[in-house]
Amino acid sequence: MDIDLLLVFLLGFSSGFGHCVGMCGGIVLTYSVNLHKNSGQANSFFAAILPHLYYSSGRTFTYMFLGGIFGLLGTTLTFAESAFDLQALLQVFAGILMIYMGLDLLHLIPKFPVIFFKSGSPFKRMIHGLLISVNRSNIFALGIVLGFLPCGVVYAAGAKAASSGSIMSGMIIMLVFALGTAPAMVMMGLGAGWITGKFRSRVFKISAILVIMLGSLTGYKGVIKLNKPILEHQQGNVQLDCCDPASTADSNSEHCHTSSNKK
Image (cartoon, rainbow, N blue to C red):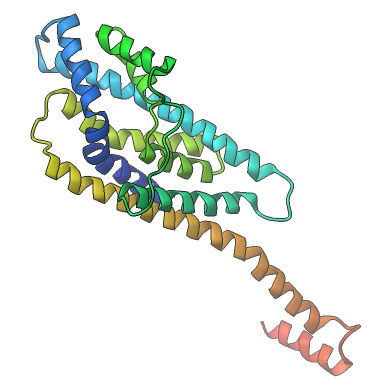
């Protein structure tokens, strides 16, 4: 789990400076300008950075909420009655989905569809209203709302959260992911103009590769879990065939018990 969390954090950190700055940078700059207009000039660095921390905290709250939902899905499948390990199947599915999303982010396959965000939707109008009226008292709410924006990298982290099979684990995974994205968002809000397009492009590719790596690791763990009962069943059959007195001669049975005692 430690390696997984490290990869999730690196995914959030690299996608923050690559994907998030490119996709959400305009929103962050817009709310920063309107925040200055509606709340006035900050009189200290702490006062200047605090609203951006509130914004990132709002996004983190939403990501943890989504992580709990994804984890609940995994928990439900874990307790479902089935001849197969549904949790392991979910890990394999999540791994394949994350690999697909990573390839999508690298533009190596057809574009991953973005749904439920059509032009003129109530959700989009709510975002517009919050961006116009943003101030120090409601910027946390803006972060909560914008946390629900469709995003391929968030989907990938969500798939990992679902494969955890636990509500708490799902929330922790999304918390770590959100903390990884926070530095880029805070710096962008403070006017970090040095984050150039070339730099974003390079880091964006790194984040896409991390999605593929994390997906491969998740899928591999699922495959191992699926194979484990089969191997245990085969080993049990071998021991049963060897030591079953009804199907072996007395000499073979004695040899089997002797071998077992030696082990």
